Image (cartoon, rainbow, N blue to C red; front, side, top):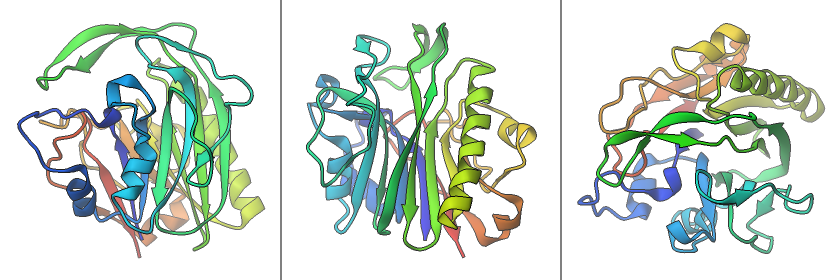
Length: 264
């Protein structure tokens, strides 16, 4: 089984001249489980497409689960979810309206989808945001609510996908909350957990504040010339030897490169 984490940046192409189809890019990744961050559902900027469905349809035999975090577009106009919207939308459900969040696309059958609310920071920060030419510029961004999405798989593994806050210390609090949740899932479902995603924490900080170990070391940001990694695949120390890193060539979608591991 190959697990991939990728901040998808709503499918934005960093090099517009690169016209490789999404299906071809996904096939080259060769992933059995794709944990995706910054995913759109029915938003104008991505052509009103259901991106989890679009990605799964490009990979025959895959299903998907999508955990919305806001209604609308982060950085522009959005609102908090209602209680009815705080759910996991799957390939068997009716689509939601104008949503943004995180997703897992998998060909490994899913026993159960789970969701955990992580809250948000009350402040925003100026961030370096990539534009359509692949350059970055400072842009003030208001933080949005964060969630964790777990797929309890039938093969004995569980993949938990997160996109943590970019606000310092808030993301550490969210990480600790997720690791506690992961241990609960391990006990209740008798499963092995891989905790993956964009943690917005550089320099291997997640392994310093938790007892979880990183299974990947590839730099992932910015995608055109990686110099740092905010993206991680973490497991408990006793499971680290069961994984080995898979490296990918440059991908001309998103300002993050995907990272992957293969499970022995």
